[in-house]
Length: 184
Image (cartoon, rainbow, N blue to C red; front, side, top):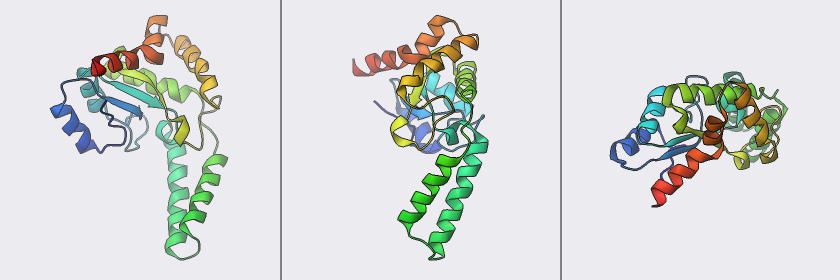
């Protein structure tokens, strides 16, 4: 299974150029809504969909919310400034950034739905899934504290106007399809 979530834009396009099977961005979001480099551009979402792949919506607020991302960037910049000035160690700076991120206001659950709906509008209902990244984040949107809260996302997707068959695709069927196709 080829996963481009940690790949550069150039690597994404290299994978697209040589792939014949679906590939995934297992935990990325929509760059047009939040300009984080880990997120996919609309052209990338369309290309991923063209190959039958899936974009797994990441729940980390810095990938969902430009406001949260800007605050996190400022915290990182200050921490690295202090390390460079010899005022603190790298480890201490890391702990300080983690504390700042944990104290930031969590964006609302609606940001998840915004990214899902944007990806569906750009690439279609078959190219979107839930990617989470719950094991690698210090914060989640308000109302999501762990995997036990995933049903809330499904409820919001239903409330946004998606029909049950679309929600099922997004919640699990799209990734299951790709796994079957790639592992066959």
